[in-house]
Length: 331
Image 1: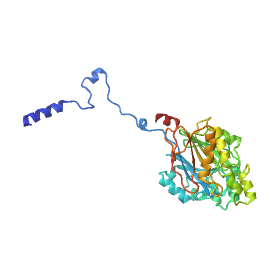
Image 2 (image 1 turned 90 degrees about the horizontal axis):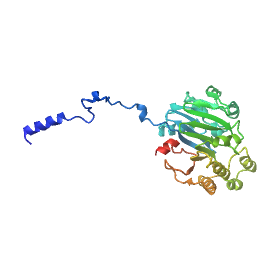
Image 3 (image 1 turned 90 degrees about the vertical axis):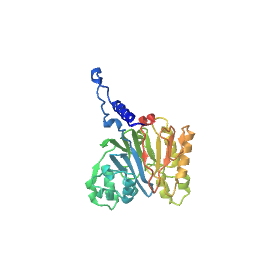
Image 4 (image 1 turned 60 degrees about the vertical axis):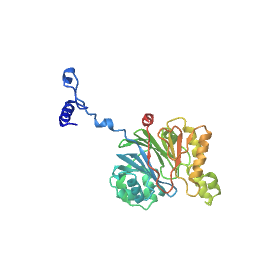
């Protein structure tokens, strides 16, 4: 290409408008400058998330929250392990506001003071009776009282974007509680350590989109196992624990009526149950009731079947992001 032609082409290119240039007469025609979109337009709503650090006879502790605010449910798992798993899942411990205490048995409270003393911004949310039972039953520093925030059954309280309501369960601890946690896009309900479903527990569990429910023992394993008779009777009583079949029948009774999407079987006995037996028993009862069940380890975002999984007894689960109905419709 000659030098003269090259200069001519450069001149022509310089005269061409840019992709985002407005025509010279735009002002006269009433056009306005392009306005950048607000940052809020690019931000999706916060999603609730759930993580279990261990769920069984040897220790119970889990996390529920959003990226900016969270809670621990019980404190029966080693505090160092809990902190390590929070970090591994990119959850800032400074966002965790406190511990919800279901009752005062050792496998739910053993590490409460250790967690609180190293995280002084946290509170211990417990009913007065449950807190007094903790002090009476356990050799624990009385300084834990400095962290106690009293709560009362059926009186909701707020922690960040979450509304928490404690309700009655049936167990032989002190003033046992389940919790209904309503947050962005999901309602999470936990009912653990209960020998039967109380009327108030049933009311809140029917509101759940995500349900953590006890499936403690297999009836045959308990009956033929090595436990002494008095302990077998205590476990099987209405103030003891739920067996797999009862849990399956209850889930089947509520699954078709509300917005229940996912069920976590919790507090599986180390000696009288296995995850496979629990899952197979519960799943068979639910499917017999005509409710389709998802068998995959992780359901698809738009999964329509009820997803059921058993929480690991002595290790952390995967972090679960809770899909709201709006998010599911967008996918």
